[in-house]
Length: 217
Length: 106
Image (tube, rainbow over all chains, first blue to last red; front, side, top):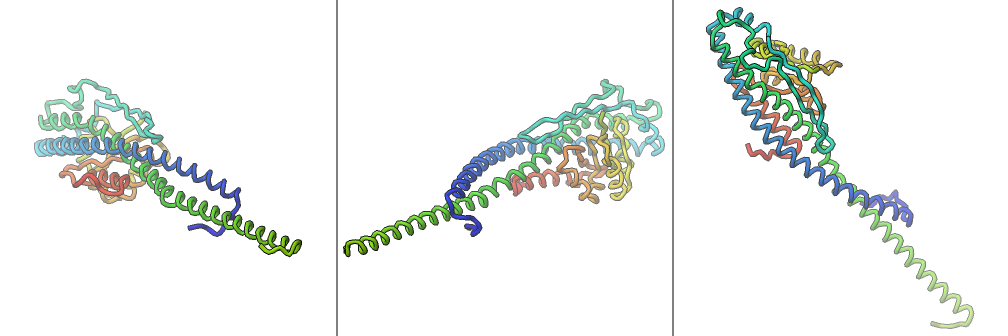
């Protein structure tokens, strides 16, 4: 809809044409950005889905083993056995830039690299099921870290895509049509003025001729 | 040096403790929410916070706050009972948010 606030002059027309050009270029760029983000996003989603399934299965299995262990051992013993860990995890975060979205990349290092060193208890008073549970747990842990990274990436990308999509739509369905409408309005108005001027000139010419020579066209 | 936190039921977090993660047992959603707020207040010490699904279900609003910030990552994990599907739901929600519709087909 042409807004009535614009003044139909050549200067405004030129300004509007410039803005339309910028809007079109911006629209194209944002559309490309959206498409690329979407492509990356779908990869991440697929990976996330796989990891999620793997982590959930792994954890459920680990908890099941722990359940068995807790059935065999007394709760106090179990808690005591797990109270002090020999393992510790050092985590560092760097950020990776995907299409201007900063997503985290986790680097972790476990203190005890040897998988046999993770048990924080003596074997005399604990059941084998507990070892089993811990073993499963430590194996799923790596996937859990990756899941954290992938899931955060997915959330951040989703936000950016949503924002970009809104912008693309705003440009495509609001900004650009409005600018085009205004440009059309101004050029029509200018043409009308031009016609009016031409007709006026013709009329004046006729009047002048009439006055001078009593000349009838 | 960043840390990883696990919030969950007493029994759930026990095994994570042995892995060297910091564990915070919580009995219910309110307590979990309180812990989550404490962990994220001001400092950026915790890069990843794992929360048991059953507790997370009671404080979805709190967890959604972290969706748009780069840190920390709040990740749902299944509890001792089988997964209640909240983690999958979060994935679906993200897809819906980005695409506008669920295109995963399930």
